[in-house]
Image (cartoon, rainbow, N blue to C red; front, side, top):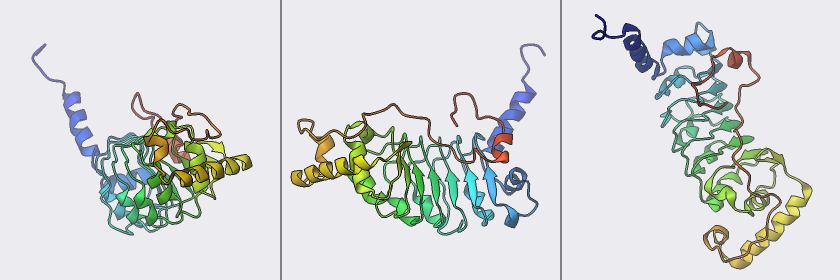
Length: 257
């Protein structure tokens, strides 16, 4: 009846949306194109409204996963449940912790930009990390961040821009000084001259006897680093080189890469 009925398609869409919010065994097979879970190595599940992806562990041979542009608040994965995973993209979710990293000790590349992270301590679970992108989170303790990162001896690429501490003019110098193996910071190559500048800033901080002073006491004049604060860049998104990535439909309006 006109004006009094309901849209059956809308109801079906709503039901389908609820069903799609939880990752299932069937979805793992469908989106990987495989017939057996043990053959699933790569998954691209971006922009699907997922709130639960715990079923990832059913595909224990995964090496690369993209869960970007979903609604994940956590990833309850048992320790070492994804032992072969080397690349993980969880950009643009609602994650407040990286505690799930214990599930993937072989991880080499982590993309977790635009979430709600406040600590990087769980990174210690992945000693082989080479690239870490955590731009646009809630990280406000630079000392804690560099302490968590300096144990990653293979780390070469890092993106931290868009966090509360990244607006300070000495932020880049302090990162470069603390992370000796770093080649790229926030998309810019680390120059030889920056190492010298970083040493000067480190000496200043040592004299002050308070590594946190540079962002907690505005009256202290700290040597300015190589680069001024920059607006948040669009974070790097993994899987851009794969055919499966390009075959997926674009994320909902308003999403990034």
